[in-house]
Length: 176
Image (cartoon, rainbow, N blue to C red; front, side, top):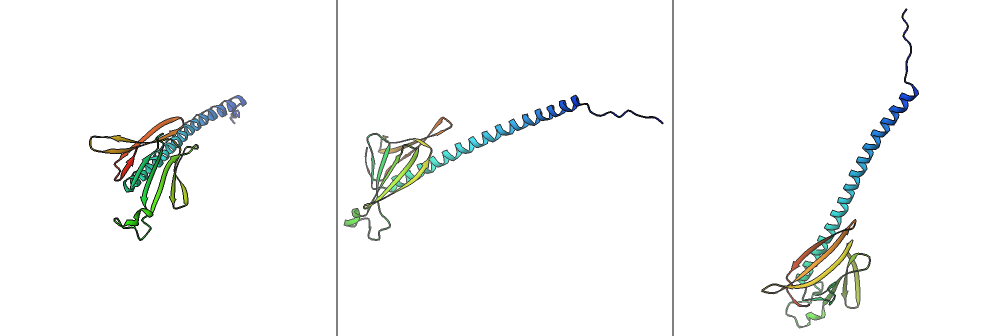
């Protein structure tokens, strides 16, 4: 009868195998973590850009509807006057139509939040328009025909600044 010696892995071979397997898993895990971080960064960047673009769209729509557009001297606050369309007695040529005005103010607070104040009579409601706004600038630019309102919102993602700009022609009179 032929007898083969029983041979197994030595302790050193087992330790080397475990070390190599852990090294490969560590490298794969590092690659996956890096991919997830890039994905999270891009998602935050896209969300901030979408919020700023939505805020710009809202501001442009309200500027077009406003009967008065004002920009303060430091150019970081926008004031609009609009007719309160919820009032049934507001007709375009009615003498008392100016009694039903809404005052709207867009400004950025110290916490990088773009806010919108709506004042109807003595009541003021404040709403958050966009978060993560590092800068808000409102100014009138002059082309050959008329002046347009140029709105620039600056967002910051992980230290990188991106400016989103929109230009709209007010239908009403304005005060630079």
